[in-house]
Length: 503
Image 1 (tube, one colour):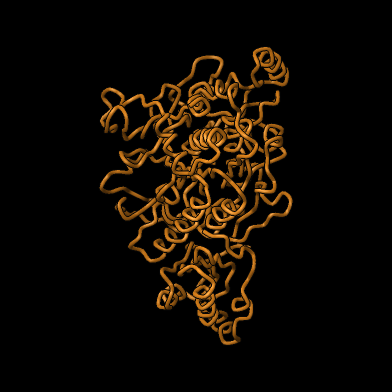
Image 2 (image 1 turned 90 degrees about the vertical axis):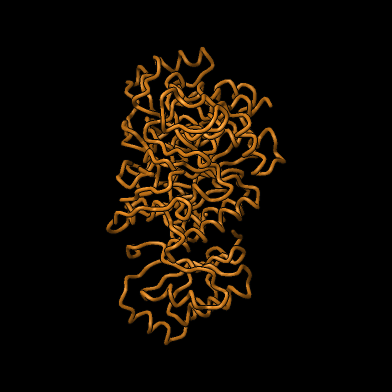
């Protein structure tokens, strides 16, 4: 799923190859019965039909008044998240956002996209590399692994012993009361490694901003191209069931909240807002966010539209945290120092024509990665060095985890320096990226929640940092700054699954 706009590089799949409880899915009377003149105004609007977020003071009273103003302006309310004050609206009026910003009670309003509504935002690098073993070789590997108490493909997973997840599973594989939601491209829950631990009741399709919980709605649009979420899910919680690979937390549950648009695989704000709210309201303990919110790699607060995106997703993420959810997110794959005074961005907007710009990291944020309270994850390779593609930055990275690096080659039998996990259709493949590092951390966060069920998201984050093992800055690497304990490449260090279940 490589793409120039990927964190994203999208995720690094290296070839190898967003609070509120809200009235989800319910349109208000003001929205569904817009005055005739408003509908006429919308019909005569001369702009593309876009999706907007209108952010207000939370609560039914203010939200209701703003909905009426939206109707008068010719907008159509798609969903109103009253508890967080985020309203998703469709309008073809180019002046819609500007007019809404003058409405009393509106804090911010802006378009969530630059391309018209139709009937890719991850953080992997390159294309997946399938496991190059014949059926007979797989069978032989399975027999050997079984004798050792391993999964058939576990000898190829160098990442598990790198964070002691193989040893942790023997102490505590995680609790069935803990669920990690994969906010992503969807998950193939029929995969034999995922089916035993999949939670359908905590899964949904949030594309467009309204949660669809019908059976299978959370699955990938196109399994051939939308494999990202399935790969992430396997790293978190692939079952130890004698099939394929093992997850970091093989005893916990995993759910899917699909937020990627069909065909483009773009992750827009209204979908991510829905995902965070849904996760919060359905008992999820951890969310995995291996993407950035499209179409902007960085959302700048001095731009009204982008500021509204930061506001809307930030409200939803904060709501989730208040409801006990820890949000874990990928740092990105552009090898950028997120603590630098200026950063280049030549890939935004990625849904129309990108424009080269220089952004100020103090006012322009990678969302949801840089939202307050989010655990930001950098990627490492087999030699415990920062992966060449991984973003970094002193004070920006919380922890690091294996994300893979084709230039850091593991000892046999692993063969491949990337991360092996599940793929749609019952397959397995190698990918690399901060997208692949993040689920390792989400899995360990789930182990911590299993061991400390009453701990808050903040307490789980503290434990992740306290238990991490920091290799320190590599000798001669001037991009790494900080101390042995906290630095720009690893934050507080590489996470440790064994400590999570023993301490």
